[in-house]
Image 1 (cartoon, helix red, strand yellow):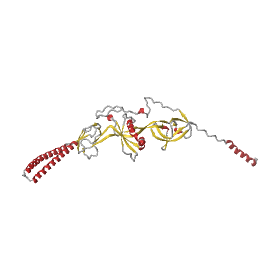
Image 2: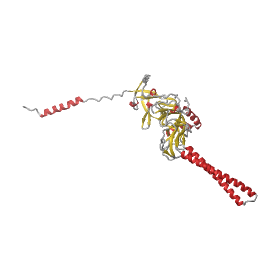
Image 3: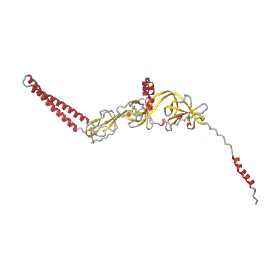
Length: 421
């Protein structure tokens, strides 16, 4: 077979090699424009914004009294029913009074002896005065009689004090309630030996109508509360009166809304350097004494009003490392991300001090999809449909239990306060 000339094959192979490469080469397509992002818009409103605050607190008695014995002895009787309402001075326990009764009887007998001795010495002293006047006895003898009489007077006074002390100890054998309130469980049963050195009290009595709620207010919240009073000292009294009039609302740990309105009771005299908060107490009426110390609850209060505040929906605020931002939408539907200063926030709204103006449009829903400079497509706002009355949505106020505003009178109550509006 005759092989073709190499000078002819080489150009042919080269042509076959580069022909497909030139045929596959295409021009790059231009980048497609990003479509507008569908979002729901809101508007920056300017209005008076109540300064709603909420804290976690726990309930305590307004007065908690530890009932301890003042004398030593065996408990022979318990008068009260555990968990019942007791009055001040009502007997709770009886310590064996026999030894103290015997001490009282002895003290009375010693007093009678001292009184008899004083009477005899007093008669001798009067006689000595007459004899001294007639110069029958010497001055020295008269002075001896006088000293004897003064000694018997002192002995009678000492015996009288001993009788009083014995009577007090005898009275202490009947342990009574120091305050009006609800008595707790007994720590000692009948037959137990108790004394003032006992580790535990006999029981506790707690005054719980009204009941006290104790919570911690952070220093930032505290400064926000007093900011208007600091800038305008003349408004301090008016602001305090308005806060008292607004009162407090309490929501129990299971979501139950307590119907009684509370009032500010007291605040500590300093802010803790360890926690950066101040302890605040409020009082709530507790008719029927249904609430007990130890419960945890949320306390809501309205502390002043932000006048002409710039308010935005809380869902529109972007928070990144304590920096707050809003996605502002211009007339051309382009987004501009701005840093703003949020000074107050609630569950639904936030108050902005700077960075926006009233009337500007902002992104509320779909904010996680937008970036600075992108174009958005506004969607009509959707109004959530109301849930059926028989099946309220979970997490709404409709599912919250509400304690009745009136409570049946406790037959053992010591006169619970009437329900306040």
